[in-house]
Length: 630
Image (cartoon, rainbow, N blue to C red; front, side, top):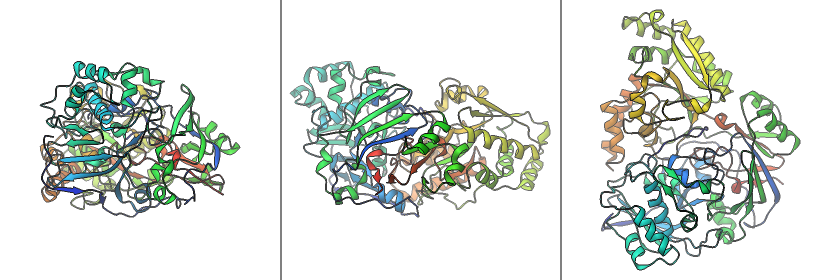
């Protein structure tokens, strides 16, 4: 997920005979985290009156509107886990301390998965209420999911984060369905409404008020990873119905941009000033207040929080954020590269680093449909002409580690299938590749490298790339554009593969992947395959690249549970992507430069966690997990 808002729109009949209780652990890998979680004797004690956080961005472009989750905005979403919670979450401690992906109950008390991998049944916690007093029930969750489906224009794969996992052939959901819900309500729904919501011929259904079922059209072993953020964050659908409804296809109800939909989390929005700040106050009726210290330690994302009030400021000026940190006006701040060295020199400040094997990277895309980067040999020469160590040392303070994309390193079972070496700096090899292809670099047309004007480290990296490619005779012109004009010429930011292909001549030959740093919106090993190299993606195929061998791997992710077959297909796909070189994988990143590396005053703040998709949902800390020093 990018740190400027991205637009990745996208998104059974009977239970199988065999059912297994599911808590999943995937692939242990080494990782480093900032500090050990403090084990307070009381989960409800407030140890700090006001916590102030300076962030780089204001939630945009939809302010606080959780209906916008269908398009993976707003970003940053400061309400993630603090106001809105999912059915299941990840074990934050295991994720950031051991690099282990372990799913834990959140609003679902437990869940089962059928033995064929197609049906997931979630049993909701009892007694949970939204902050407005409405009870959480399965009908509320059902209405949210079909509300998103309706907003997507009833598109099978468009609302679930590009994962085409449901078959909506038998679904007839539209204005009449919404009218029925409006007449009935969700707290004590009518028999007609219950009949619609419990229909097992629809892929998502509620057999009772305490149970919600997701039936997939094919096995997908990593389905739980699609629920931990974005459309998986649960809000009060009754409140939505009471205030104008979801909106219309392609146009969500903007009333909720500045009128927060209630959630079940430990905080509520108490006030805000657009493009300035949002103030949060502890939810006095938070269901998790009764959790023991041991339970909170086991699932830190459910922590009631340890500050009575939290103010998150949007401050675009890096010097201002740094000065606020120095003066104590802020205890946590996002600091960009120009002031990062000052942080490293001061022992009073600690800086956040991602685990060594996470799901966050930086890279460049090469337009495979436009000369000269439409020539495979030119792309192969480029990836070996770049001094990766130079970029890591001079721009990222040594914070880049080599990467072989598109898989995220945390998924070690599927990472770098074929054991291919990361692209390396070798000018001689670059020149030999061009010579063998009969290409004289100086005769090729200049390459335009586009960067977002707000991204200083992007510009610094581009300058190094320009100088490196000049050595092999390629001319690079750097084009700095406003973020709103970056990427796809049809829609700001990103667009579908089909649209990008039709407009490839308007897209620069080189540009940053995701306008800067990229992290997932769903923590599954399929994620970046479905985005960066798929001909069926609704966004983020920045290289406008597709290949049948690669697409076979992509399709298999959501069509089979046969790991041997999947590994075989994706090993071939990995080799194809590697040799075609549509992307320059600069490396995985430790500091959070895309949104300002998270820095804190360690005399006040002891520890915290970021979101479960490695900052793919928000650019700062999940503040209910903040533990205070002393």
